[in-house]
Length: 310
Image 1 (spheres, rainbow, N blue to C red):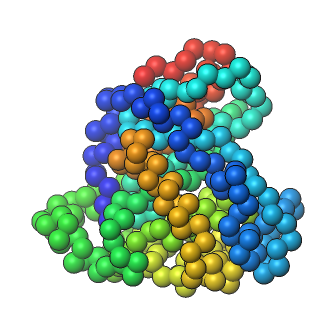
Image 2 (tube, rainbow, N blue to C red):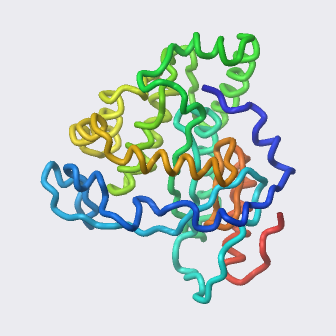
């Protein structure tokens, strides 16, 4: 599946205000009003100093996180927020919620550029969280043949190859070896997003996202296969057997679908979309310098400096 090749440029100069009802629309992850569904079904627990608890449920915890908001806008764009009397704790990390899909090549490029941006601002503590999005939720659970899908969706093969050529060039610049010819299946990514959600509990979410990107775009792995996803989980430090068992059921399927629906309802129509501190959005796979500058400006606002310009 493709993200528009020019999506970053399309949004760079077109700030769009966030809808007023966007504040608080995105739930924490996992939801803060219930125990982890995956903890209750066999093995994941958030325990300091522990990894997977195995099949036994050693502890259930609830994780409350600031609610991010999604936006289809520029870099950065102000997001309306509810009034609050308590000050923001400047010692807390600046949260960056990245709305993405694991079959979006621009999201992979955006991840590399975000990593470079974070490295460029070592004085600012940053915490990155990955949020789900599906470029095409209509794909069946078993996925579809990629060649047939692209032919029906995009028509002219020359157009697709031109986009691939551009992505290969951009990928080389950031250390990605795109191998589009190796990809045989276009998957439904809902289960991959369930896995990414569970990885949050174990503190290996970024590692899982990285493994899934590399598996799909550099190795041609089928991200619709539960066995493939379970191996990816194990590669990233999770318990692959537990992950595979949960993938076979419905654990957190509805919660992930709700997050995806919320992203669409509040204005996310393209990815990646990076939400900085729940306040401002950087849309598209912007250059690392653009992202770093946005991080600095948001951190400056938090410290009482000048607010970022739209």
